[in-house]
Image 1 (cartoon, rainbow, N blue to C red):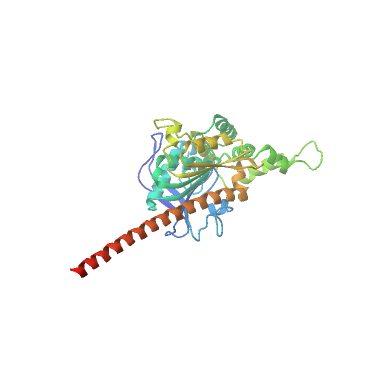
Image 2 (cartoon, rainbow, N blue to C red):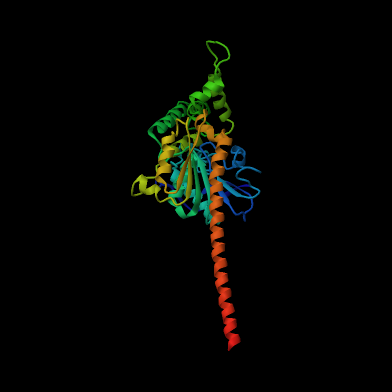
Length: 364
């Protein structure tokens, strides 16, 4: 299921710099002849193996089911799960800046390689949602249905500052810049990030003390644990470059017009979902998208868990997505019924014309 696409020509980045070739690692689940093709854009620390990290939505008997749907997910440029990134370089920080637009350009290359003329559902959350909205703007006819979760049209000053704080933690590690360096910095950066991925209420619910003490708090232990655990599955330089890519997100850059006019170019039927406790991607950003994209609806997840609710509150997420997709299926059946009715009418007319011709011939 997981494989690589090796693009051997020059890949020109938004910055004008080039990579002489790129590798795109991707997973392609389900029948190639499926009626529905789903493309998943993953978040910052995700991989192409969506059945593993988004199992509440993707899997057998789930909303997106590889036994009936074709499901494609590509590891983004700059990541460390098989696609070209800084970890491939002896001097990791010599790797050029990657933007969301570059990621989408690579996705389009892969879609062309796979022969995909239409994506029935494009879905992404967080950094994945940034890719999805950029792609829907860059190639509107390709995307039939668009699902944007906890994301935005441009990254905010607050969120960019939060990413910079994490990069400062990476830089404080004296080994950062060496081929296998930066692990202590990554641990600290990930611990900091957990403060934006979760919420005040989430920490209160899960990390409150069961007894009075003066040190060694549950919340302190939790963020240390999350930082340590992250070292076993991620790369400091991927974290650096992907956080930079997230900061780069702005659909207006490189285009003429306004946010209003650019988002009006999106032709996909769209569902935008916000999370009421998300401080990193506040609900106002999702409402902005839903208001500006012509055929868009807004859904709200009420959750105490913060930004990461899209990986936690599956019951609420399934309810919103299921309703959206059922509406789409109803519209599809209505259109098919209308077409079938028109066809039956045409057949009836053709039959009467044939009968009339027969009568005429008989009379002759």
